[in-house]
Length: 397
Image (cartoon, rainbow, N blue to C red; front, side, top):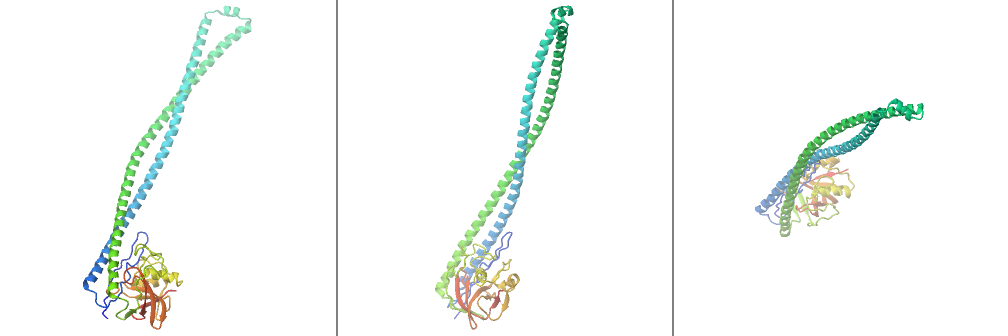
């Protein structure tokens, strides 16, 4: 039986702050009863190139958007600080304005008291002037006795001195109030100048924030557009692969020493795997793209077989597992398979350019019944039998 395998490219998913790695497609592995025409491989590679290019663009746009977001956050923090300064300044202005208004009222009340006291003193002086034309003998004669005469004289002197002291004190208070008022007016003038300057800075800062947020939104729109294009191209690619499966069979094949048979066909998002969002639309807890062979196997190891599986860090492609799984999770090579082991198909030309991983469900002699995802590049679950030949077996502790 002629065998011609197709490749589906892989691109690690790079994310800002956290590196998320997953294969865009672990391996497109299929055999058909007859050779696949060369133009079909060209189409597959063309889709891969488009998807890889769009993913790179989306990552670049996302990096720009994240950088602008960080810049916008910094600018917003500075704007918030300016707003807080303005609020404190305006509270200070209000307090000093209230102080100024009170001083103004005190000055007016003091002026009124001064005028009243001056009027009283004027009346008294007028009376003293009239009394001054009366001789002491006449004043004494009008008094009931000597004591009354003395009392009248002392009373006039006391009242006059008291009014004079009051006028002096009122004038002193008025002068002090005027001084305080001028000091407050100077403070108010300086505070209002600072407020005007901060208001201008606030307007400039707000403009920078708005501009940066606008640029961030533009890059986010570019990210969304690139992702929409990825979904569109992926849909075309998956439809193409589905047509090949329908027309060519592809349930068994031999490539070098690797053999598989009894392929179940694509079964959608099944097998208990929980990350059923659109193919490659999210990153799983192990930093791998969803519905890829590596994502499914990592999940199955931990959820179904109770293994310890740590996240990958930029080296999660299937062909890298013999070294990266050992590094991050302590996996080691074995020769005799058992359920729960991982079957790694190394990178092998156009058949599996970035390798492929499967998990062993059961063993019969040198034959292994495996489950997997993305065997045909469509991000779906399937099962098949493989020979313990041309593969690497990994066991997770």
